[in-house]
Image (cartoon, rainbow, N blue to C red; front, side, top):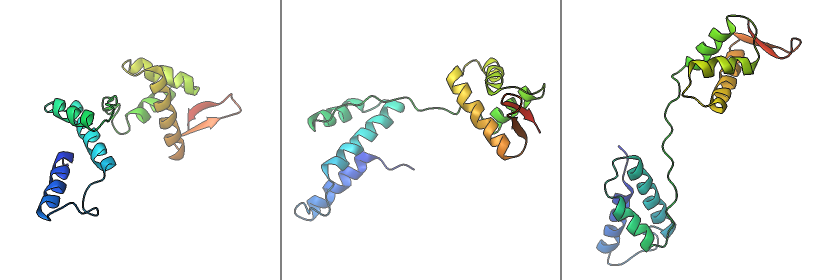
Length: 146
């Protein structure tokens, strides 16, 4: 279970109140509180959105900018899916990396071409490490099944 940043701030304030004052060794630094609030804002935006106004108000009170929050990247392909697709493409004969990418991009149109190219290169390299495919430089850098 992930500990909420707000709980950490509250706990630190409670410790300071119980001890009769703020001990510089117990309290949270401003940059720690700012970071906790920024991370809490990110989690709220990616989650249900409840309490966002309060966290943003605290950040504004502290003079902090509200950075852009990117959506969390999802899993593009399960384990071994890209490798199997690359092997399927190479089953017809030797191909260049771009040709394998074209095959995979045709099978998975939701991927952008740049992302498909990166994933294909990674899959081919891992297959090469495992000894399943090889790259023939004499034939112009084509990949083939070993």
